[in-house]
Length: 436
Image (cartoon, rainbow, N blue to C red):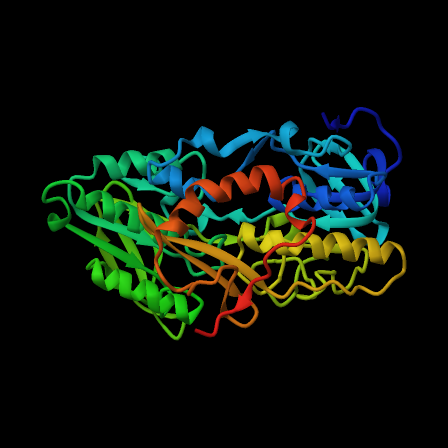
């Protein structure tokens, strides 16, 4: 079991602040999610003697890709969670605190528990912040009267309850005007819901399934956007582009959308709903947005890194990966799987005054569920928005075997291989650019 640490005694602090307990670790990781645990495991596989601390306030570790399957009635929420003690490497110190402030010029991080955690190298991967408050009325409406979101373990079970109890009318599925983790998730639950509606006599005929997005296409990679556009058309799903959700009127069961033209609101429309799945706006956590680590050019506050080496542009002993980084690719666990070995290798190279030769190429993957028995394994080079494939198959096709991968293989790989660093041992299939 990993050791744990919380503040208990006082010593002098930085910049004449109130006294803090000061601790030091050669490597400090902010975040105990997929990125933090995987990177820690990889570092320890290269050098088991490393002294590493992870700052993570939550005692639960979620397999977040499983929340879509929870919302679709395939998983229970309990199937997606384990204790942090089960996944944090045994030799890592777990600081059960929340990071609140960076002091990069003094190589220190401050926490809610009055800790001052000093480091030689810092890895920043706290995940993404869900900005529920940016949609007026959402916080008050969610979790009742058919308003739900799979972007929280609190509400994913209610998604399935609402789908099961849906008796017809307007079923809305929205996408926000910000980057989000797992950009395909808002459509995955829509296709599963559509399947369920069709399984009940006459229900789909008295339902209007609608997908509303600020974008001008179904997905960021054109090849997969074309596939999803075809799926939506075949299923008679009402797609509305350039529609951004701005307000939920819970009592009236109405959703208010801005209509965009060149990303600028030019009008608005209210649409009544009987069920609405909301993908909320998202950004970097506030303590990153307000820090010297944030990208000054980004309104979302991502950690400002070089997209290849994942090293911070101004603080060379700081690296970042995962959802909070500025790497210009989709924010998925599959991206983390390829980013983590780059960060581990480059941090150790930095410590040893060697060139940073490991580079992340933008690879990611989004298994696009298009029903209860099929999925498109959408692998792509996120930097160039081109399809790739780890399999000798056309990646733009719906396949039953990819549904099985999503449902059975990927959760097992996550818990038993990825978090333990094992996927990176020995040879493994390298995704190739699809040219078919």
